[in-house]
Image (tube, rainbow, N blue to C red; front, side, top):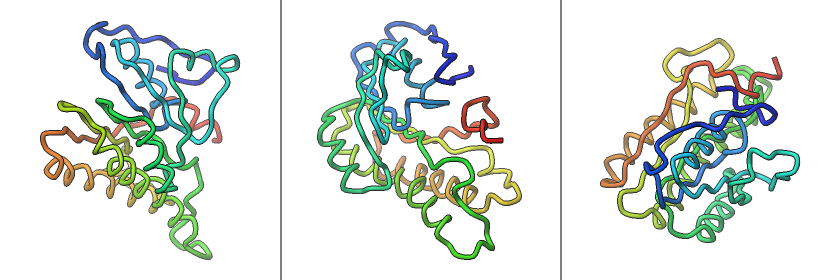
Length: 199
C-alpha cells in the first residue's frame, strides 16, 4: 500500500477484530505508521496517533478519524507526560524514527549524528514502552518497527543497523520481562512510502 498523505487507501479488515480497543500509533501520520493506524481503525479500534505536531485534517483528511497527540520520543519527560494523558489503552505500535540521512557516517567528523539517531530510535522506543507499560490493559501488546538492514547491513548505515538491532534485542527482552503483555518487532523490507522521496 502506498501510504503517502495524498494517496491513501482505507484497508478492509474484520470490523470486530479490534472492536472497542484503544490503539496508540507513535509515528502514525505517514508511511507504515499511517497504514497501521488506518488498518486498526478499519478493524474497529479507537486510534490515537502521536507525533511531534498536530496536523490539520483539512489538509490531511486521512487523519480525520484519529485522535492526535503531540509526542517527541527523544524527550523522556514528554513521553511520560503524553502516556499519562492518554491513560488506559490496549495496543502500542512504535513506528517513528529520525528522517532519512540524519545519522551521519561511521567516520563523520563527530558522533552527533549517531547519538541523535540512537536517542530517537532506540532510546525513544525504550521510553515509549517504559511509560506506556503502566497504562496497558490486560491482553495488550507492544510492537516496534525496524527494517531489513537489521539483518542485511548496507554501506553507510552503521547507525541505522545498530539502532534497529538494539530495538530488536530490546523487544526480545521485554517479551520476557513484560509477559503476559506481548512484545514484538516488525522488520519490513523496502516499502514504497514517503521516506524514500528524498532520493
